[in-house]
Length: 81
Image (cartoon, rainbow, N blue to C red; front, side, top):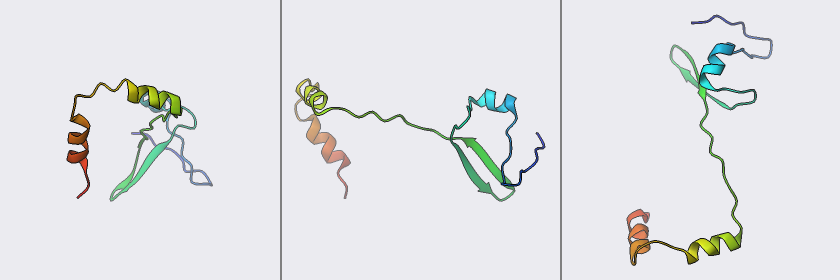
């Protein structure tokens, strides 16, 4: 447990050894959750998105390794009701 001071703008500093243990770097996003007995702070999970060119997508479609009928089965399984 640590005691920290809330700054004038509502900021608190997470102790360095805690940030290091959790792999939190400057400007890392965090999730805040208001609990009945306090505030829960945890590192946010982020996903890196990649943008693919039309040519790359066409290449993937051409090299499709799915078995015959597999696409229809997947679409049928995940179709919204």
